[in-house]
Image 1: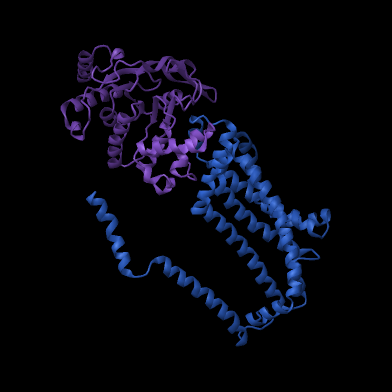
Image 2: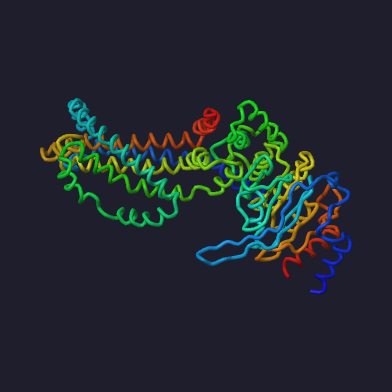
Length: 280
Length: 282
């Protein structure tokens, strides 16, 4: 007891005297770096250190973004639609399939090596095929991005479902849970963190898939716009499109992170805790 | 070797045949048999290779007794407990609880506490305790009332709204005990419940368990690999051999109750411990 206290208290005291926690330092450092990048983006082109064709200043990029906001908005909407549809396919099927593969031993042994091997294939090379099959409209983007995001989602979910604590299902069984009750009230809630993590990973890849597909061969979407501006040597336009794509990716990631936090911390707890009661 | 037989013999001499021992001083000594195990054998096969895990297991436990099962690792004591919980079907033999055979899990007759507490991390302590009642469709208000009673029994009423990760290891096990007792089964099975706890918590939890046991008046079957723990807690210790697990002996722990830590330093404690240790080692 006395030993324990001496071990845990000494470093704590030292930390407090240092004045600033590691967390705070890291945060300040992070903001400083972001501020520096933004400042450099504005200053470096203005000083003529880099030709404006290669790197237009932040203000000129934002000016283009504002001036052509209608055009950007229309193309962004196309991209968003494609991303949303591909998300439903990739993550919907990916998660269901992954849960099935992960929780069924025979299926896991039979299919997981195949899925893992497919993961190594650079799927971009298949995109010309997809355009041949589905045309250069939205359909080929949705299909390509779905396939692109599907495999990692399957793998992630399967790995998670595999590690679901078997003790928990056994405990439920000892309490007289039927097979259906075990799936509904144990396996499903237990796999939520895994499913969310896979959704986050798969979703990021879906966004990449859609944008890359639009850049290669298409008639609409933010990637299409980016390609068009590039061929026109309209650098501020290119950078404006990049900003929008970054915003889309970061926005998606933050949204899923927020859901993850809600689940693991306060909000999700209440929801999960309330659920059995509501169903009775 | 001679010392071992001497020690074992001395226990037999003092208490007669190992199968008929029910301590006369326990209040529940004359009550009926809560748990009966008859002619139990268990074999399983993995990849075509058949292994006998348990052989000729037969014993019964009277109501209100605290029985521990000890044995070398891999002797099948955990399998035996799974069978008593209805989670595993023995190849041969009958398990009866309250005079009726047990063929599948029945939390109204047998409550189970697992080694790692096995609480659902997304449910609060209260919801965890309510879970077995929820599965049976018990009405919400009654469920809550029962859960709160059970939590009060283990001294955790103030932590009803905490999530498992906010609780210490010992507290988690207490929630798990409350969950096992929430349907008021006559028997509580415990599978190495304190194995994952640190030494100090383990000792505290032992005393806590004895307090709960005395208050709830349950029959407890406690699987452990800790001999001191088994002796400290139990009325009787069932000693299993290595695979295939057979019953080597049933040792009555004649230490007075309430138990206290200084008993561990008594010669009788050491004698019992050594006797059991030699049986297992042989």
